[in-house]
Image 1 (tube, rainbow, N blue to C red):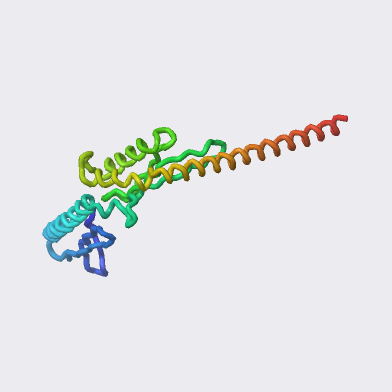
Image 2: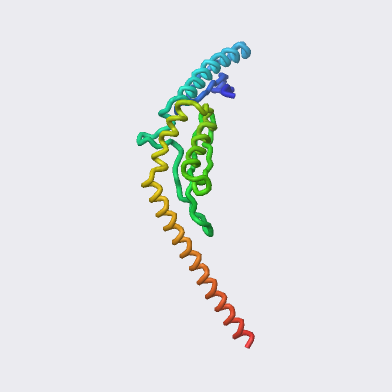
Amino acid sequence: MSITLFKDGTREYYRITRAWGGNEHQDYVRIENDPDRAYEKALEIDNRLKTAQTAFFLRQQISEERYFHSDGKIVGLSKVLNQRKGRTPAWEFKLRIKVPNEKSPRFTTISIDKHGVDKAFSLAIDKICEWNGLDRHSDIRKSLLLAREHYTGKADEKVMIEQKNKAAVQSKKEISSVESNLKKDIEKFLEQRETTAG
């Protein structure tokens, strides 16, 4: 709850706190002879602040500015090459979306290698819309889909293939290095075993 009891020396207050737009809004109601009346007044103030907070989040939710960077790319969506040890490198869309009224951002990834770049992009947009409570036919969703060229262009596909091949070669080098070291360790072990046995 946004109403808390606050003590300043011998005086008691109800502190009403709500935050939006990077700013914290506070108000105080002094508790004198009638705590119930002071609490009712605090509730009135809290309702007023809650209305302003809700209006801010609704405006933010329907504003396209919240979803795009100045270069036209989508906020919280990136295309990354996931390189895990012992696995083939895989391209994926990585989502890190800050949803209004939630403290922590939401995360997920969508495999480009599994779905194909166009389908994976559409799935990423669907996830952004789902998390933000946007309708499938909203203008914002249509605008998000128009940003596809920033992520799925032909030049971009060529870079993706080159980077994936480069990562695969690096991965094979790492595996052969591990195999080579393992063979050396086994040979060393067998030599030590023969000398101690003989």
